[in-house]
Length: 205
Image (cartoon, rainbow, N blue to C red; front, side, top):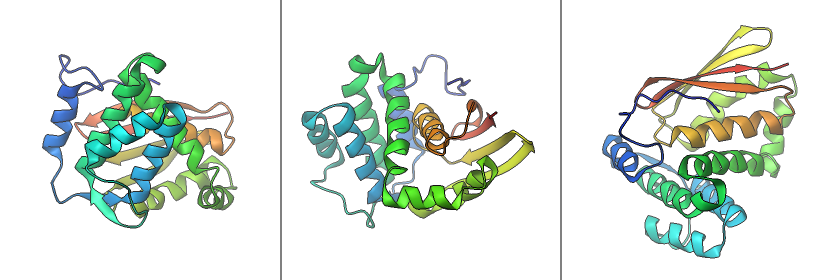
């Protein structure tokens, strides 16, 4: 995991200051499907415990999430940071906990029926998997702006704009996605191009 943040150097990744900064950029009308909340909660359950799950639900002011209902994106961000703080000691810091959450979330998704269906569609290799990613993002969040293009036979760039989630979480999710697809030698480098925009350079064997 390698990244260069455009956030102020005085703002530690995963900190409460960064959380407030991200929340200030989110339109209160922005929403995202409940399935994403449930994915985060399931990861917290696997990596932490039920106490952490209950704390996350309290922060989001919800007792449960319905997969295909829309909920405020702000609540997802607050819940994610809270979970990372609760897992920080176990994983060596908030940023590492965020990465682990994103990674485990992807691995859990691709072990599900829906996830296996996505992998089946991408059996043509890494390039085919990349082709499916923009629509996969858009399914859960309509405002997602994701594009991909190959830069060589074993390299590509994925551009993700308006990503309100912590960058470490997204990086972990990308790593988990390509590992689940059994892409060998996958490496990822993040290059921030804006406060909420990142280019992910990818290579594989």
